[in-house]
Amino acid sequence: MKIAISTGGGDCPGLNAVIRGVVRSAIYQYGWEVIGIRDGLDGLVHGWDPIPLGLDQVKGILSRGGTIIGTTNKGNPFCYELEENGRKVVRDLSARVVENFRKTGADALVMVGGDGTLGIGKRLMELGIPCVFVPKTIDCDVAATDTTFGYHTAVHIVTEALDRLHTTAESHRRAMVVEVMGRYAGWIALEAGIAGSADVILLPEIPYDLDAVFHKLETRKKLGRNFSVVVVAEGALPKEGSRVVAVSAEQNAGVERLGGVGAMVAHQIEQGLGIETRTVVLGHVQRGGTPTHTDRILGSRFGVGAVELIRRKEFGKMVALRGQQIVSVPVKDAINHLRLVDPDGQLVATAEALGICCGR
Ligand code: F6P
View 1 (tube, rainbow, N blue to C red):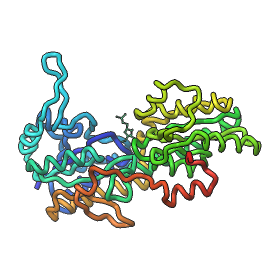
View 2: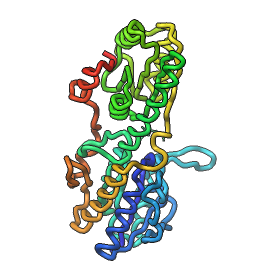
View 3: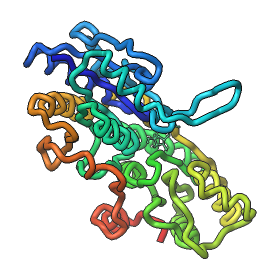
């Protein structure tokens, strides 16, 4: 038996733990051969020269960030962008991917990825590649699993950054606006904001009212707290009709695209309240470097679980964490909808009970 593994989409701390988990459990338990597909599915778009993955290749990778087999988030074979005669064109190269997969001689493919990759994998299954799936994202927004590896590390990094930003904010009596990742989900902002003692947390799930933010910062000032830490999820948006201070219509429209919202909020605080403000965009620091022990363990459990799915021939299934258990769920349950923060849920209620303004 020979199995292949690919890692798709943005990299994520714990990916190497998954690869190691697949390789070690496949070899130690069943004596199978394992190969890695290069750079997501790009390795199959461009050829079929896989990376042999034995015990030596996964030695020492548990603590390493990134993925030793590479990844890309531009490689959807069903609408692959390439250049022909100097022009950009989009082609369906899925048949080539299926053909190249057959050439590798692998019997099954472990696809590790987020929402997008899982959807691509489901379509490849329909074309005849036997796949099992492992959910991956720092955003923690994949449905059908309680959490994903990489998320714990991201929250840890943001929390540490908030601790550091507190001391500089306090010394200079500034408002620090910290933009964090999460795409359409506010999990990183909310959990790190609570752990890092933020004063304001703005989430995509709760369109923010600038008056509520101003009220919070002014109340702090009256209490003699002359600094504030504001965490803004990159997907946060202002509430319709919310006050906008000294920002042009064009700038406001720009908030709709991901990114830049931290700078926008900082600008509004500075103009509206006259508080000196700085913006910090944590960016890819949140997903680089060594994974926490939690993500190493979850990644390892998912890797071992994926091998079990193949052994049981449960193709089309994804490993998931439910409570303390690794379970298998149909991959279709995990795609096409995201797991988002519930504005009326316990976590937001906890933040608000602690006096944190969640933008409303
Ligand atoms: O989905 C993970 C993520 O890190 C998001 O939080 C972020 O919006 C996006 O990927 C960044 O993507 P890229 O690495 O392509 O800039």
